[in-house]
Length: 239
View (cartoon, one colour):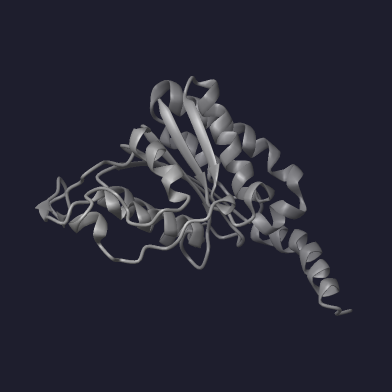
């Protein structure tokens, strides 16, 4: 199994997103997968201009020349795409959304009925056949992930791919302040990655266990008070 994993966090390897993603990728590697991870914050990728040159003049090739050219070969040749992104304004990060928009160049301008009985574009080249989401949210409620999950699944379907699972850990503000609470969950996430590489699936009950909130809302607010105190101090406030 060849895996391309993109970390869309603006914080790169400093954030909770990378801790989750890194554990998952370690498990995939342990299970025998060949893994390539890329930090999007380190790349210069422009937004899609909707010029449609990729559909009408140079089929399958974007007209823009930037660091997206580093990603296309991996996206075209891998079996699994792992999307790592925090929840940003109820969706994926701007860095990740830009990459997904730029993958439209893999589509042809024609219209067809797809296997789900929807009108969609066929493909000049295809994305990895399987998509997996790894995410975190600053807030403690699991409902925070619902818009992102819907978008992630829709994107997988629109690219003719299968979304095979999501790991979504809420409460990242508290987990940044008390990182020891996250460690046991990282072990489970690593096991999930290995399970996916070996068996090509993760048992749904195991994913449910992984995705349980690590702290209650009350615990979250108590721990996050340390962050609030730091934020007040950085703003020059005493109360």
